[in-house]
Amino acid sequence: KKEGRNTYRLYRSEMDLAVQNHLTLETELRTMLDTGDGLFMVYQPLVSRETGLTVSAEALVRWQHPTRGVIPPGEFIPLAERSGLILSLGERVLDNVISDILRWQQQGLEIVPIAINLSAAQFWQSGFVQHVERKLADASICPELITFELTESLLLNKQAQGIEILTHLSELGCRIALDDFGTGYSSLSYLQHIPAHSLKIDRSFIEALDDPNQSSRPIIAAIASMAQELGLTVIAEGVESEEQWAMLGNYAIDTIQGFYTGYPVEADTFSMGLTSQLSQ
Ligand code: C2E
Ligand code: CA
Ligand code: CA
Ligand code: CA
Image (tube, rainbow, N blue to C red; front, side):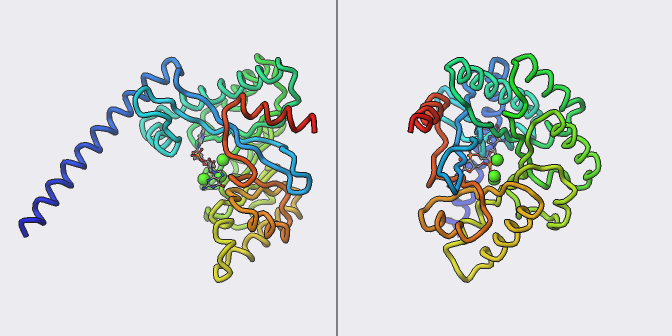
């Protein structure tokens, strides 16, 4: 009983510490976002299953914290979403990607389309599409070079308005990818109404490929063939092994993203990879 009480006390002080850390992190995030110093992007290749070439890349945000090292987005995006900092974070991400693209172009590189993740608050911000249009025009970046990744849950309850925004984005020339597909609540049939260009099958299905007892295989098969029928490019996320790569050959999957084909790397490392791909 005594031990139980001590455990409880320890637990409480750990909780206090967690809350304290959390508040500190929020303050630090706010300060960092004022200048944007410390925020940078890494790029993970998306590889054609047929040719093995890098056809696109996903931009993933990182925070170089002064004392804690590099903090992954899973630890600060939810915090940014709760504290209203997500709009300014999204703005920094867009700026960072634009400046990386400009640098690659100045280096004379033939670059591939870059995918940017969107949070709900960003997507639903009024004037979002015009804002993107202005930013890209100011930087003289072709909208075809930008893909926006968003999850199906973002459209839940507000499908008609969401489709309108997506239509404008796609008229602008940007591409649209449905992220983490298969984990939401929507039915496959709603796909035909969404003006998307590609669909990313969630990593959880790829992970479960190794286990024949799980129903992941028929689900992957159904999603992939349906998407193909609708003219969408199909991307498998989170491919980690040669076995998974090989198994995915059985389905209508165009593109592979995952540690097996490439880790997320910093801008310069990514562009060096593109250069060596060209010279091969
Ligand atoms: P996501 O959009 O599903 O991004 C893919 C995540 O899976 C990335 O984690 C990536 O590093 C990881 N990943 C890629 N291949 C593999 C693999 O083979 N195995 C495993 N285990 N993981 C793999 P990351 O960079 O930590 O990002 C986590 C999430 O944070 C992203 O999930 C996305 O939802 C969010 N995020 C990242 N960058 C941004 C951003 O700039 N803006 C917004 N709004 N969200 C972002
Ligand atoms: Ca994504
Ligand atoms: Ca994803
Ligand atoms: Ca995810």
